[in-house]
Length: 298
Image 1 (cartoon, rainbow, N blue to C red):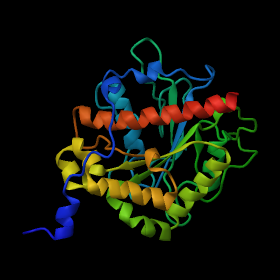
Image 2 (tube, rainbow, N blue to C red; image 1 turned 45 degrees about the horizontal axis):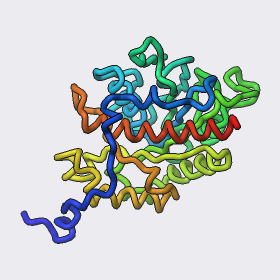
Image 3 (spheres, rainbow, N blue to C red; image 1 turned 45 degrees about the vertical axis):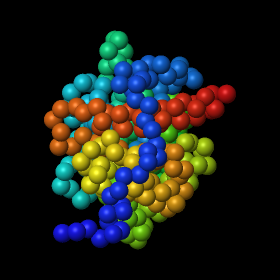
């Protein structure tokens, strides 16, 4: 069956609209070459987003790259329509914050990578999922390791998991909002359920705190047939570029802070093309986070 003219146009490759410089990434040099502005601080990245966008899968994918094999440190649920992550676990001196257990990623030199990723309960429609006020407290470093999120009530100051005097090392240094590229056209539908409003509310607080912000567009292979066939075509895809533009317009984030990626899901072995997109996004998150730490330290 012949495609409609607009469909054929959408599937016609564009000139490359973004480049990924992968030479240093292939050698995995950037985590160690990155000079942390404050040696007492490990960079903290908070990932938020609707349920099912792949937050825990992203953490597993990053860990897999540095471990050199598929990892399952952050528990995921392939069928649940509700959030599978319910606790906030921030192990000391670890590379990733996962939903239920401490996860240490070795750097190959007897130490650990200089960052922490906070995996939290997903945002759900209505009153479900993570409480927006709790996420604002996470941004400011007020919630301690092991806090169990309650969708019906935010953390209280008298709670044992409430940190009344957070310092820079407890705070979030980069906020990442994660959305599925294959459903970006449904942002208005998300908004009707209140999810996008929650994202905007949390982003507003991050802006007040001057915390840098990034968007990750996951499931790019499901969003464009060209990319599904060859991931190297991601920055020649008209569909992916359009989705990046939609996210930028809807959420107010510059295009150069929006990164389309693919998490490991069905693969059983590592793939260079997947790694390059993930590492390019991670590299920019770490640079943004480090700039924030530098500013706050000064």
